Image 1: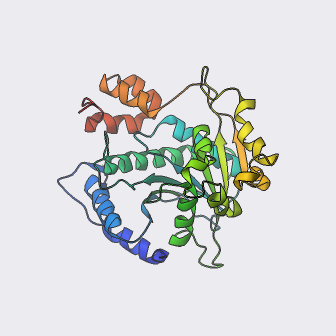
Image 2 (image 1 turned 30 degrees about the vertical axis):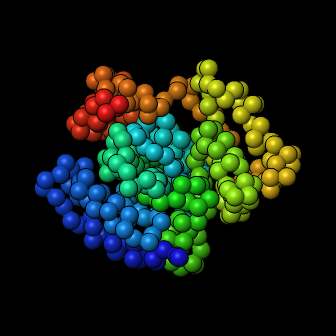
Length: 316
């Protein structure tokens, strides 16, 4: 079943964001945990599989509809500077094309209490990450003489797999160009470990082939950030190029992997420092706030500290 049209999403979003709560902790004058909680409840009970719950609007008018939607999909428990760098790197790489960024959280297990941060807390932190990315991109863009602004969306999905997420984003109509009816190209921003999962046939029953992800590569592309920190388990950059090369050489054809998919996979270098959400949670549990800020940035650190996130024993 197709999702409601984009105007229904926007109308619902505006209605829900206009509701404020004096009993909840506020993220901004118009956004609270209660707002995000209401949107999550609405989404869980709806037939929709994708919803934009918040947008950090462009600071300057966007002259053209976006041609590119960068999709950064993660558990965001918590957001980190690694997420920030992956998003910003992609935005700069595709400039000056009209583009937009989507931070996406999967909620397919919404019937279970997520730990250690609730989904509404993660959405709050994603909103702060969205603001950080927009602020830095706007500053960088001005220094380079760019004119177009950047809008950053925070979205949720019920779909667990990348190809299904791409389809649900399309079918929502949220990013459809009102004038032409065309969809922008999606660029899914992955870490190397996610590329391995994407190309693992065990995730595609019952045939256990790569055929299901043909829909992803037919219209969209992926940008993979290699793991470059010392001692990473994935090996050298050359070794991490092997999954792409295997496709290009036809080594996955028996599993219905296509050679041309390799042209839709971009491999880029990551940072030398390993930054993970696990490290953030460990540092927060010890109240090592300088370490937390180095890993997540000032806004997210302040939120984590004020909410006392990750202070409880995670075994509980």
